[in-house]
Length: 327
Image (cartoon, rainbow, N blue to C red):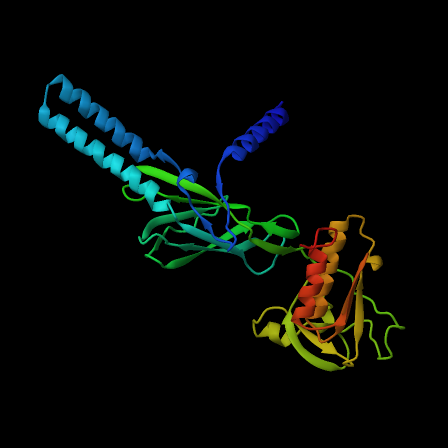
C-alpha cells in the first residue's frame, strides 16, 4: 500500500507540474518573464494581515466607526498595491542559465544564473530556488545584471540538465509571494564516481617501440610527493615527512619518459558496468598524476595515447558519456 500511495502521489505531482506555465528561452537563450507566467499567493504574514483587516472591518461596522472604516479601506488599498508591485517586480525579468565545470557523481553540479533587470526599473528581493538550494536574495539595478550560483546534487554520470528554475519575490512588504518557473538549456557534465582504488593498468608491448614499465612508481627517478591513497605501497611512504607531522605522503618515482600504459575496459572483470566505469575513472586519475602517456579503450571507442589535463578530461568525458547520447 505505501508503494501504491507513493506512485499515485508521484503521478499527481507530474500531472499538476505539467499544467504549470514555464518561461521558455528565446533565440538568444534568454528567458523573459511574461504577464501570464507569474503566480502569486499571500504569505503567512499576508494571511495575518488580511485577518486583521477583517476584524477591523467587522468592528468598525458594528460600532459605526467611520474613522475605523477609513483606516481599514486605506490598509486594504496598501495590500492591493503591494500585491501589484510583487507581480510587477517579476514582469519582464530576463534570466539565462549556463552550466559550470564538470563534477563527479555524488558531488553538486554548479550552475550560474544571470538575472538582468530590463524595462527601466530595478528589481528587489529576487530569489532563485532549485530543489533544496536557495541562495540569498539579490537586488538588480536598472539595466544591470547579477550572477547567482546554484549547486544541484547529482547521482548519475552523464549530462545533468537544469530543466527549470523557480524565480520568486516577496517585495515590497512580504505580504505576497510571486513566482515563476524559468525553463533553461543549461547542462553540466558529471563524471563517474571514482572507485577508492583500482588495479594497475597494463600496457601492450606491440603498441610502441619505446620501453615500457608495468608500474610508473618505484623506478629510479624521483618525481615528487603526493598524498597517501589506500592501496599505496608502504615502501613508498615518506616516513620523515610523517615524523614532521606532515601526514602520510607517498614518494613518486618514474623511469623512462617513453613509458606508456593502456586503460582497458576488457582488462577488468567487474560484472556491473557502473562499477567498471568507476574503476576506470580511478585508473585515469591515478595515471594522470604521473608523467606517463596513457590511452583509454572502451567498447566502440578509443582515446589514443597522450597526456596532460585536456587528455585526462577527454578520457573522463568518454567514461561519463559511455552508453549515453553524446549531445
